[in-house]
Image (cartoon, rainbow, N blue to C red):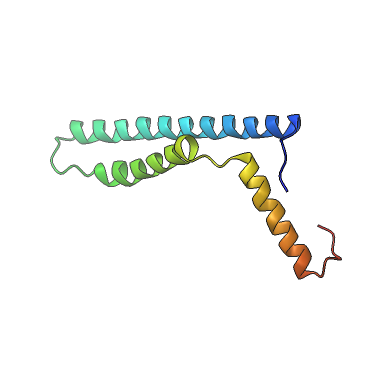
Length: 101
C-alpha cells in the first residue's frame, strides 16, 4: 500500500519538521523569559512563599511534552500518510464505495 515518498512529499515532511522545531524553540524561549521575570519579581518582592512555581511547574511539564513530541517521538510522514489512506478507505466502505473524497 505504501511506497517511497516523492520529492514533493519529502520536501513537505521536511518543511513540517522545521516548523515543528521552530515552534518548540519559540515555546521554550517564551517559557524562559516569562518565568525569569516571575522569579525576578518574586526575588525583588522579598522572597517568601515561592508562588512562581504554580506557573513554572505546569508550563514546564508542557515544554517537556512539546520537546518529546518534536525530538523524541516525531510522527513520520509515512505513518501519517498511511493513517490518512486507511481512514479514506474506511469512509469509502461506509459510503458503499461510490462516494468521492
